[in-house]
Image (cartoon, rainbow, N blue to C red):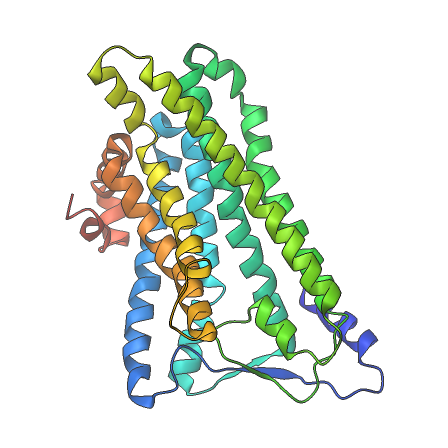
Length: 334
């Protein structure tokens, strides 16, 4: 990936002045706040990796959880670890070394993978909604519909589509020239801000960003909306209150994550705010890349009896406790 970016960059430099690195201003320019940000985001990063890592281990080691729903959940947890790992470690390193620089190739690579993993989360939430739709609305045909090959297909498609989207934006960005301005008022390389820095015509990039972004977010939301309309209709036909509660409880964790993920989009980007646009972009990025991946494992472990049981069995293994002394702390509140 890095060699490809370097070759493409060299091909488009021509006789124009280009930059070799960008400056990431981070979340704050106040020196007294840097250590606080270092401790805070290091803690959030470790909690995210530990929590989602436990989810993946529990699903992998417990044969009872080898079902389509937990296959998708394991992929979501892996995407969450990867998403936060694209931006936070570099931000922590910059704070620790009092440096703000990131090379051109590293910046474009970071942008590529940040697009990939946010989109994977988006697509997987739609896939998981479809899984709950089949489980509740067609329970007798669930195993027939959600066969292994089809589940693998539903797992692979989000990764393929997300990489296609990221590659499209990256190839278009590589055609642009960056002249004198190299300062990004952010803690990672965001596509929209990179377009603003370019001294080339970015009209095509912005049009592609708008239309591709619209398609990428519309399809999963439509699938989620359709799935839950059908789920609600099916549940309302159940006569007993206990049956209704049991049906709703199977998709409660997923619905909570959906509300958190898309609620963030609406709250940050669509509601009026007195904050500056750059500050709002930073808040949105922190929520997407740090907060949401951190709380997802807690939502699934606290609201899912099967997951709580699998996690307890996992941390009760003596060998696991010797390797992971922090594991028992993760479930201490449950």
